[in-house]
Amino acid sequence: MKKGVVALACPRPRPFWSRTREKTKTAGRRMLPYLLIAPAMVVLFVFLLYPIGYMVFLSFFEWNMIKPMEFVGLQNFITMFKDPAFFQTLLNTLQYTFFTLLFGMGLAILAALFLKKNTRLNRFLQSTIFMPYVMPLVSVAFIWMWLMDTDYGLLNFLLQTLHLPTVDWLGSTSVAMYSLILVSVWKCVGYNTLIILSAMQAVPNYLYEAASLDRAPARRTFFKITLPMISPSLFFLTLMNLIACFKVFETVNLMTAGGPVNATTTLVYSIYRDGFQFYKLGYASAEGVVLMVIIGICTLLYFGVLSKRVHYR
Image 1 (cartoon, rainbow, N blue to C red):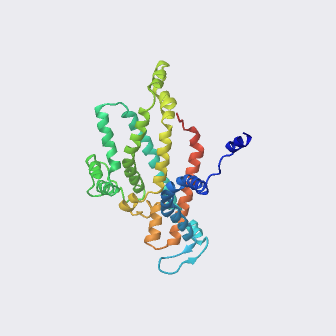
Image 2: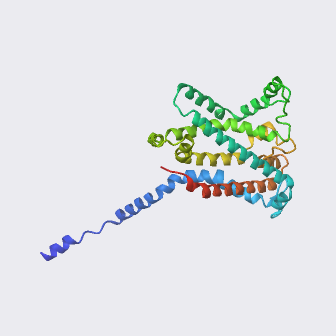
Image 3: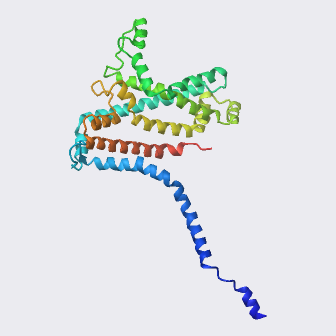
């Protein structure tokens, strides 16, 4: 009896091929997540990481795509920071970014407050205000170039009708940048408005009812209820608009080509001009590195300062 009990207590050893099959299945389960993300990682490497690394590599060389590369170390960066035109370009970019963000977000908040009520007129205005965002930027640029034409433009015609002096919208060094800002704000404010409006409509109504019972004024209700509750949308929009403003190119290239006298030259347009018009690939890559560092610093500061002020429900 004891021998029988011992025989039942000791299971038979599994065959070798069964253990090998289980190990293969376990390894396959472990590798499955990596296989699923492999296509996305390949695309990320080919179209993002490799170009960034190659740009940093080129910034240490002098190359015009014809002669062999010549290693110059930090000379491209030294030349760039000694050039007053670079600081003018940087100032233009900061000016464009600041005013586009200020008016693009400010007008979007005001428009969202105005369109908050669900009426037939507001629904029509919502679709109308969103139309500039979906229009091709080339079409937008040509429309505004016609509107701002010095001799035949509609804006100057209206000024003449009101017996006011005309303005050289795209040819004046003091006005051209603000003309580009006007076009950019006109194009982006509709998208910002709809995102903010959606966030406002998602705020629970009982919060406003409690504020009305406490007889809180409208300004206090906005700053204490509406603004904190839509802060995640504002956080996202501001960051996306900030990065887009630093990378502005099409509007400058189509409407002013950086002029007059570099008054509207931005960093991205300067990179394009130095790299593909003057064939200074190393210098343009150094400008690209500086732009990447500036965007990275602004993003880190933005997250560090404002991320704790965002109210997530």
